Length: 92
View 1: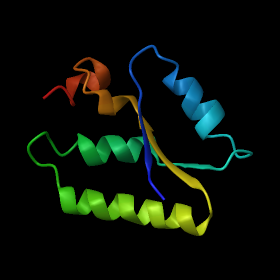
View 2: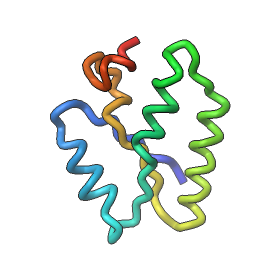
View 3: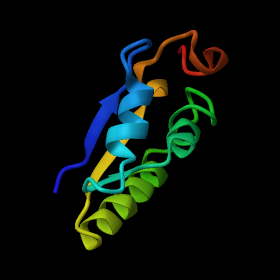
View 4: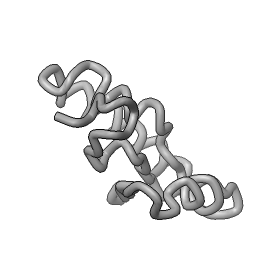
């Protein structure tokens, strides 16, 4: 099963999707924790990204989703690379 990635562009209803669609317990989605996405992809620093650790975390999430028969989703505005989001930490 693939992991679906939603890159939330600013002012494009990302929060609505995250809260009302991906986060709706009646639908069959398993949404990855948004804060964890920010920490995995940006907090260590642009040049300190640990691809092996990140792959393991995401693979574990995918396996858990499969076990629960849910669709895995990564959704985070942070992934757009907008220099104005999160104080510019993801600008590089």
